[in-house]
Length: 388
Image (cartoon, rainbow, N blue to C red; front, side, top):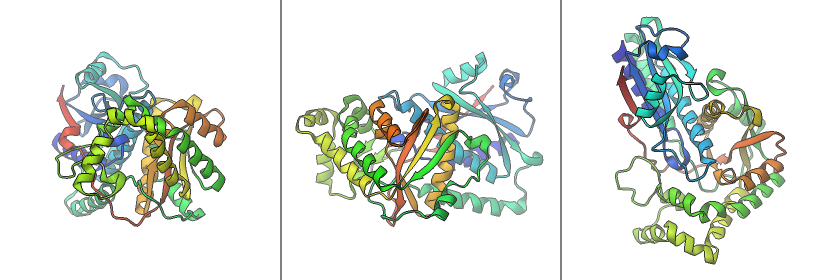
């Protein structure tokens, strides 16, 4: 049974690894505790049975972004995006997933040792259960595999889109469809408020904020150095994370790629501050915002701002993002407005957020362009099995 459950987990990771993350850093890790004994039962509601497997979703400290304190929020959200797809793939295989949250709990020595050994922050323990001591009956194999392949096709073609969207407003039916809840609240939570903003004046004012503040991201040596580390200049090179330069600027000849590789390097970018290049880049980004038909905003009440709720919010975002991709809609997160206090507070005033913190904002719209290439880590890179 353990072998079958490990196969279930591996297939789930194959799908979940296509979740979006900041800079495509993919900061998640899945740790399976095979033969887990009573040392882990303190946070579980009952001892593990023969048809159950215990695994943990963790934030990989070696892969997390850390140039700015606010990026920690994005790391929890990224792991939540992964968790949403992981749960979806588990349940499609006729297994159940029971959550036991670790990120806001006081861990015993055994859990702390797991976290230390894997240089990770444990977020949630998941008990994977085979229904009726069995997984997939012979006559169900083809159906389940077909569903998994459909999900894999959907998630592997989803991309963050950094170009111009069609200037077409979502109607009420589309918005209802995108925001409809199909996943359980035990996964997606109920504290985050997800909404679309289509007011033209609000979008114009948001455009002004991007033009004014986006240069902070480009001119900060520490932040840009970390960003630059994830830009991939050679699409033929073997890589497992980051994003290709062509995703930002479109196809280009090799000589132009070399030019950008030099011009975008952190030290050169610092020198280019003298001639306002970061402000020019901010202005170009603001033009994209100005031509957007709608924005997606997610906010949480200050009292409910916790690691657990951020992870659950990520799962909720993944549910919306997946439904959007299925409808031909793409997202372009505007994280630069949230990574520094001044623009975030200005945006919150603009949106009249009272005792609420905006934790995600993105340009959203219809697209008709083919997907580009997006590197991904292997299942083996993400999944670690530990015998206890």
